[in-house]
Each structure stands twice: as C-alpha cells, then as structure tokens.
Image (cartoon, rainbow, N blue to C red; front, side, top):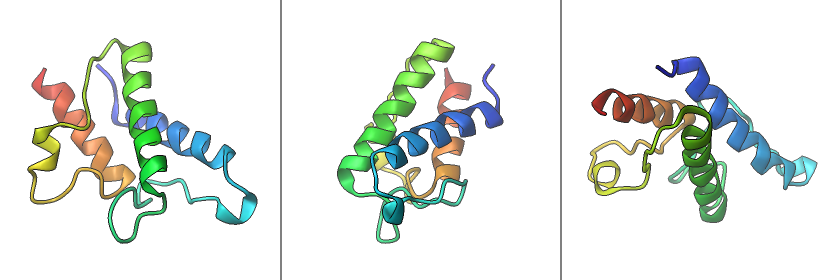
Amino acid sequence: MITREEVDAIIFGALAALNEERVPKDQIDVSTSTPLFGVDAAIDSLGFVSVISDVELALNIDYGLDISLADDRALSRAQSPYATAETLRNYILELIADQ
C-alpha cells in the first residue's frame, strides 16, 4: 500500500514540475500547507489542472492506482480536498482506502 510520505512526494513532484515552468520570482512554496485551490491558491486554474493530472498519472504509473481526483465526490464536500497539498494527500489516501 502507498504511504503518506509517498503521496506527499508525488504531490510535491507535481508542484516542483510546475515551478520549473515559472520564473524565479513566481516560484511557489512546496510544502503540505501549499494552497492549491481557492482564494489563497498559489497556482492558477491551469496550474491546478496540471498538478491534478500529474498526480493522477503518477499514481497510475508508479502504483497501478486508477484514481480520479476530480469527481462529484470531491466537489460535493463541505471542505474542499483541494485546499492544500495536505488536504489533497488526505483525500487521495481516503480514496485508496475505499478501493
């Protein structure tokens, strides 16, 4: 089973890839508290889609997990699973546990 640290590494890798496309002054902090979506988001909507896609792809290729992170279950929650890297990680672990 995939660990919490491995999921963090996948998310951080997707954020690092996004940073590679940015100029130095526009780099985002890569940590569990990095805002991903909402008013305080460190990334725009295109960057958000890129991060989600990269995370889904890594989960599939590296761990054989077929998980969709953008579904009705995620969107219907009172607290968004996309708020920060930590909430995304927790959501991913929840989805894996439910499989």
